[in-house]
Amino acid sequence: MLPRERVIQTIRHQNPDRVPVYAWVRANLEPQISERFGSVEAFEDHYEFDFAHLFGGPACYAEGAFDRFAGQPVTPRDLLDVPMADPDELEPYASISEAVAHHKDRRGRFVYVQTPGIFEANNGVFGIENHLMYLALYPEDLHRVYRRQAEWNRAFACNCLDIGVDMVHNSDDWGSQNALLFSPQTWWELIYPYHKITCDAVKARGAFVSLHCDGNFSSVIEGVLQLGYDVVHPWQESAGMNLSLYKDQYRDKITVMGGLDVQTTIGFGKTDFLRDEILRVLSMFRDGGLLYCTTHFIQDHCTIEELVFAYDLIHETVRAEG
Image 1 (tube, rainbow, N blue to C red):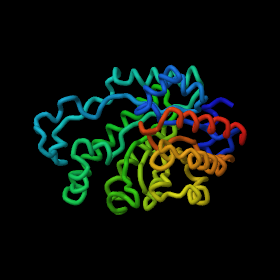
Image 2: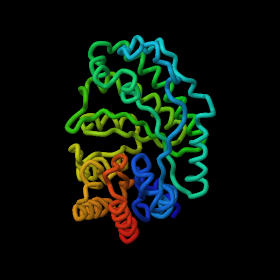
Image 3: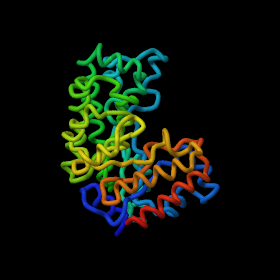
Image 4: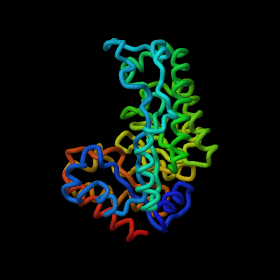
């Protein structure tokens, strides 16, 4: 079975020949990996990864768009006066095209591309503390901000689908360690409608759509399902989202990407615990339901020896169980 077929079967709630595998490693570990393997690409080939996370495309705003604020807070009404960049400018998508050719065309992998969400996309503009305050102070202005962001996101997503990506991955952190950063009511009123714009567009194209959300968002999981998300990343056990609960209640409705927790498990020198956690999670999903991956980028306190130990074990285990 080709890697891409294995991932698609998993997303469609079928039983692949084995658990598909990937890791977020480039951001913090590229020098160490390159010294050991020659490159991150060689590391991915060595462990026969089944899918790939792509980055690229235009930024939401042109460089220097906020210079006139001179470090002063930007309000939602201010932001509406700042033009967004053109999502249809082709040049910024070149790196995505190259990555699709490398991973999908030449290696048969499933490819997904990171795109902006709604809340997280505006944290850099407002600052997260101000943004949380604006949810209460300026909801009507935020409706306009979020609608404009959603229309931009839809264009970005459709351009990526034209290039050949298999899944649009909306990154939108809403969770703290125990609950949402804001109320579920706020989520339904201000976040849900604007995720729906991109989700509906992607589903209409016959492609998959996934959500990245750190922390605990269990109070709105039914809304995530209503939006039509096919995959959610990471279902963070270290934030109180239990994988056993997912398996019992949601596995036939959505697929989890994750299982290797970077907050508690890999990168801490606890080899026995790391081994036990890898085996625990993989054994739970030997019959499907999981795209095994790190819950986020592995941090730079992880040694190359520990990384190799983990992925040697993962590589061997998924093939033995498959």
